[in-house]
Length: 153
Image 1: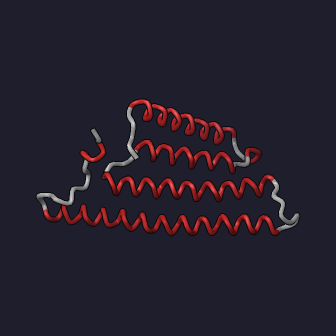
Image 2: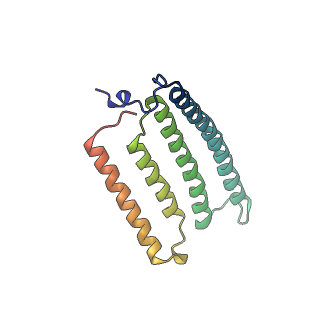
Image 3: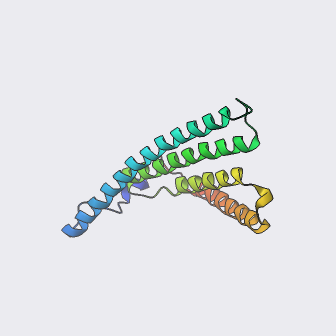
């Protein structure tokens, strides 16, 4: 039995015409967000190309050092996070249910991006500890969500 189709948080057929109209307006807003997210993704891909091109044409030509690679990874991961957010929006549009496991996976990717691009020489130990705690909490949450039920994507 698919639980996602049974739960309709924004029914467009409602007893109150105002509530029905507002639910339609919110669904339209979500569709607009999906369109905007696709534009952000295209813009992000262009940024990745620009960053990579800029790094490769600086001396030494066609070589990347570690900071350049980390900057490039950050740009790549930002686009991947935008794609994850787009998937969250589309899944929400299809089912009217917030895809909890996908949201947690997106948050894990975002914090992983942050960890990859961090300069540990310039950070306070408490910031590093707090980041590790967030990663651990999200990882446990993702594990428990996967263990307790399967989400159909």
